[in-house]
Image (cartoon, rainbow, N blue to C red):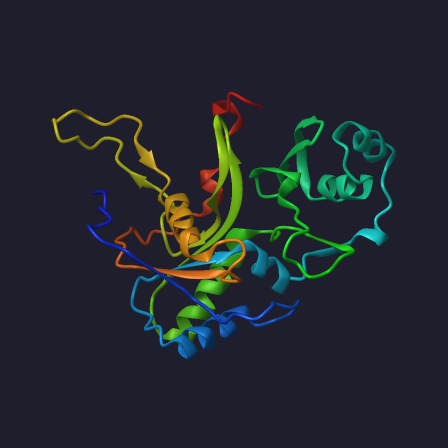
Length: 256
């Protein structure tokens, strides 16, 4: 398959006016109405980048801290990590396994295979003091359902990326990455093609869904209250390759 080059120009539009999402909300309808109010013209192959937090809220992924009874292991781990034992119990319940545990750091592999601090569980921007918010249980499925619903509402073929913020091996700071995707191949694979000097490329396989998520964060931010952005004029392969394919397998992972 020939590589689809992304083109020379893209546009990223913040979708403003999305309210605080509650469990059971019709998220696609809310996004549609916000686009209408902002006069955003949605076109074929636009990419909707949606923050995982509002997806998780709509899916009622809240956990009440006071309802959690920590296990003996969580009580011991809390002394090492210096974190509430109830939070550690919630992390364990949402994880396949622990990757690293030390003071101030608790890395775990989520149910869908992403390695994240605290298994991606968060307390910021959720509006409830005694609650934690888990990530969507199956972000690729969430992306697929949102895409189908948004396509019906807009009567356009689009793609959806669900993004979340993570740190990176060897690098300080965080960037947004794709944890769910639908309607797009998460990779732009150059392997087997030739570079500008006619050499065969052997390893270059660009994680374009991560690049798109990271670019969209520039207009979304963490304090703007903008959990959705639309990326326009980006050319991409529409083959359905889910975000879970971005998770490196153990056999190729040098750190697990």
